[in-house]
Length: 266
Image (cartoon, rainbow, N blue to C red; front, side, top):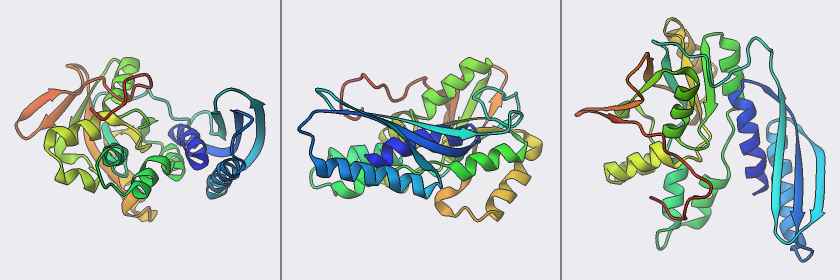
């Protein structure tokens, strides 16, 4: 949990193309909270902070009826290179880091009898914020917009579309799906990959004239298999967000993780 609360905030720093500087956490908890839990929480926060070379700068602690943990990360980017959710133009290509559907698959596994809980919880609660990828995008000069996939591909592209007035076309066959989705029925795999969220990969748009150089430089940087960069579609002027398949196309829904929805994987 300590790693998670730190990593998800650093993911927003990554999406802006910024270099992280520090982290603070505000805790409220009942007076009977187990001390070993708090030690573990602090160790997780410290582990993630050390991984990304930042300091835990402080925070606040209060007594309360329920446990609440709020984290804030700070970062810095050149003003002319900061990455926003808007900025794409028709013809730009859409790219994504890593793979998608990992968190949705893990959540589904937790609901299955006999699931290896430790492995599934690691997939869910130890996301790896793409700090180096975000700074690479920022420095490239050809990435026009970016955000992280905290809430799912469908709703993330819908948010981008709302800000730009453009349409985003995604090719289902091009998506770098998490390997665990291969054994699932296609409708289930689609739901988890497109709409579940929790992957914390970076979704970006790239000028078409710069895509080859970007991909070459990305591979040359030695990011590795988990950090691969994949072209998944393109930006169009109109006609809404769509998912292109071998048999045609379907709407790419403005649907994703909703914090107040009922529990269960749908």
